[in-house]
Length: 344
Ligand SMILES: [Zn+2]
View: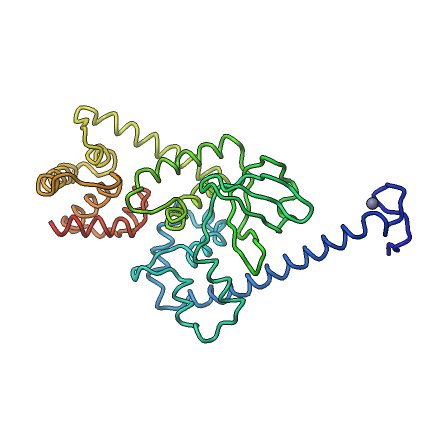
């Protein structure tokens, strides 16, 4: 063991107690604190996880899987089970408009200790985002949230030891006690990928601005988008699959260019809906617009609502989750639009 009066292992030539001892002790204290926070988080996480597997949540579980996963390949999807579990517990909005953590909180209100309450409060607000290392200090790292323009410190530095100032990543921060830990897997990404994701998400947010009051609220409701990027980044066959899908969509869009329309909803229906229902979708949408005048809100929400409506009318067994996924919106947004359209 290294004694206080031994030479410091850093090679300074000074005694350990006059050199790195204090720093080493501080970093040990800090990593013990991080370890404790992680333990507290994972204990609560497994409780919620167990709670979420109750038979009464089975239908929600299936719906969440449909929204979360991109491909129907069990072997590939099994790699993302851990992410899915976090999504299901913290992000999936159920029919009753609640997420599992809220459901858990309400069912266990009287049996939770202070620490658990505290973590739950942080979980209600937690989301996946794109971060960048802003500053590296001895016991903590300053992260900049590139989507939300806020900065925060994390003490979870072991996880980030290969990161440098400027390194971009996808991460999920949860506050436990007075410490921010990084849950799930923190993924290092390239500068180019960072820019793509940030631009995509900012553009999406712009479409939804009238629905969500700020970027944070938008991100809390759309974590599945970031989880989809994660799946693409970690699994090349998913990236390939999506590339082919995009190409297919593009060629379909080209084929129907003759009926190119100023109305983006119609353009989207053209690209998405099967040919046998396309005309009734367009007719229905035109009818709705004629009756309601100017329609506000993101076009993909409306297009999704129209597709769901005409498929229901045609007697197809289709879920809101399937359609929502296709248009990259949340099932609750689709639900809202469907309600609007149905009221007509
Ligand atoms: Zn030293």
